[in-house]
Every structure is written in structure tokens, then in C-alpha cells.
Amino acid sequence: MSDDQGAQTPPTNQTSSPSPVERMLNNMGADLAPMVGRHVLARLGEGGQPPEFGVRLINVGNESYLKVLEEEYFEDLLKFGSSFKLVQGYFGGGKTHFLYCVRELAWEHDFATAVVELSPTECPYDDSLKVYRAVARRVGRQPIKPFDAVLGLPALLRELIDERLMSARAAGHSEVDARLDVERWLQTTVSRAPCESSSYRQAVVGFAMAHLERDWRLGSRLEAWLLGEAVPLGEVRSVGVYETMERSNGFTMLRCLTQMMVAVGMAGTALLFDEVDRTLSVSARRSQVIGDNLRQVIDLCGRHQLPHTLFMYAVPPEFMRNVVPDYPALYQRLKSPVPLSTRSPQAVLIDLEKLDLAPEELLTRLGERLIDLFEVARRAKLDRAVQSHNAREIARACVDAYFEVNHRRLFAKTWVDFLFHQKADGEVALGPGAAVDIVLTGYDALINSPAVDDFADF
Image (cartoon, rainbow, N blue to C red; front, top):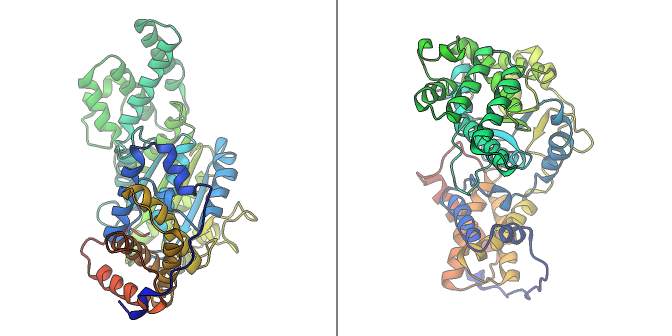
């Protein structure tokens, strides 16, 4: 480090009210809060990646977008309609981070939610069956216990049936009567719900009945069918399933999934797709299919075929510049003079290059939140004035030395590493030269680290 590392320590600030991070962690309880904090620090420190759980503890800069989504959509429009939003941001610019924030927001409003990473090999958006399978395996409600995995559609259906049973028992019904109540609900309500595919509806009802009756053999077959696996029709025809899932009807089945989520009692569905093809080097045919599929989804969001559904698609800016203009029908639907905001809540585009805070201020606020998180996670007490000063110095160095938006990932990893050093070696206030040295060292480590996932942006 440079000689100005030992710059004069700023006076200590006195704070009386808990920070947003402290309030959220306090709500988790004394045992859980340190675990959550360590999880977040590990994700950021290892590769500068957003944590899958607890992302809103460190979220800054996009609050206005989340506020519009909550007040205009989850609390209003999505109660009777649906919506499509295109999220735009460079790699490292916060798309994955933002989708995780939206997922937590959707969970709070009791939406079945899935975050799906699209890639040309494992889950291309032009292969509707693979898209359906990915959604079916990832959709779910907020786990009861932090860090529990979201287990997909069959687990969600079992959970909803078990809750119905418990509610009936709590109302004073015997075990037999409780099962009869749930069976009656399935036969008179769920089995008559609007659904484009009668086979899909019957598969959901049949799976729920098999769970009620503890028919594990039939339940396992219907579970495989609902997950999009190849199941001989002879094994599921007895419950009214006459279709096989294939590429030609994958998006129809995806629409059916959203329709049946409402039928079984969920408030709606949030489908959050993250385009992780960095180069967007797709063939003209594949690009045409992707464009047609997106145009169709946008049109369906204006009808009742995607009930109470938020469909969000996250792409780099090259998508709007290089792909969309080739398809006028899609371009007309996506092109907007302004991004989503409180003044234009109807806008389709959420532009993560236009945030609530300037880059230096955003990183400084993130650094301050990580100070709070570090103290809880490591059961340490840091000098807040010293570390707030250091956060701003490193934030300024990141922005000045690294002009791409990936400075967010660089800052997150560098700052977490720095806090550990401060705890181990003693706290000092940084000068500008020392901050630049630390950032350059962190940059070299970041670009050479095999742990960094190029596609998981902060």
C-alpha cells in the first residue's frame, strides 16, 4: 500500500437509529442473521456475484424501479391483468441482481416465481420445451427456511394441498372430512378452471389427488409429466392426460402453468428470464424464433391467457440495438421514448444504466450497507466513520480506474476483502493513492479468478 494509507482518521460518527440492513437482519433473529450475512459476504467476496438469498440487504440504486413494480403492478395491475417488462443492462451491470430483487418482491406478494437463465446450449429461448422444463423445475414460493432450495412445480402443489388440509383440520374437521373438503375443492373448482390444455389441468388435479390418496406410483408419473419429461401416455391416460409435452406445445404448457397457478390459489406468477449469452451470436433462424416468441408473449400479456403474470426478460443493450430492429412488430412493442419510472409506470423498458444514484454514490452506499452486514456476520464492531470514509475512497477509485459498469463487481469483491483485512490488521483511513492501489490489485485478482462466473452479474 502507498504511504498515505495512514491518513488522518475522521471523527467517529454517532448513530442512534438502526440502518436498513440492521433492521432486516434483526427481523431474522439472532441465530439466522449471522448465517445470512456470511452467505452474502461469501458470494460477494469470492467472485463479486449477487447472493441468491438476502440480495435486498445490499440493494441500492434501483429502489425507484422496485417501488413502481410493487405499487403499480403487484398491488394493482397484476391482480386483474398481466405485464411484460424488458430489463436492459450491460454484463456486470446488475441484471441478475435486479431479478433476484424482483423475485423477493414477488414472493412477498405470494406469487409463484421462477428465475431462469437462458443460454444457447442448456436453455435457449427458441426451444419452448426446454424453457418450460426450466420454469417447472424452478418455480416456487419463498422457502420457509432460508437457504432451502426452491424445488419446483410438484413440490409447490404438494405444499398447497398440505396447507388446505391443515386449514380444514384447524377449522375442526376430522382427518377424513378434511380430505373430503380438499377433494371437493379439486373436483369442483380446480378441475373447472380456465386452462388452454385439458390434459394439463387434469395432470394438476390428478397429481393433487394422488398426493391426497398417497398413490405414490401415479403421483411420480404425473410429477414427471408436469416437469416436461417423456412419459408414455398409457401411464397417465387414466386421469385424463392425452397430450405429450414437446417442442411444438411448450409455450402453450407454460401458459397453462400460469393459468393453473391462479386456480390452485396463488396470487399470480412471476417469470423472470435472464439472457446469459454474452455475445448474442445467434443464427438468423434462432433470432427470428426468439423475436416471434417475445412478440407473442407481449401480446398475450394484454389478454387473459397469462393471468396475473409478470413476464420479465433481461438482456444486454446489444439486444435492442442488433436484434430487435430486424423485427418491426417486436420493435414497435418494445421501443419506448422513456424507461419505467413513477412518471411513466406503463413503460416496457427497465434501463439499469439509469439508476437512482450516480456510480460513486451507489458504490459508497453499497459499501456502507456491507459495513453493517459485516458487523453482524462476523460479530465485529468497526469504526463507522473510518470505514465510511474508506468506502467512498475505494468507490471513487473504482469509478475512476474502471469505466465499465463492471466496477460494481470489482468494488463488491474488493470491499469485502478489504473489510476482512481491516478486522485482522487494524483499522486505518485510506488516502486516494492507497485506495487506487487496492482497486488495481483487486482488479487483477478478479479478472484472473477461475471462480468468477462471467454471466452472473452484480
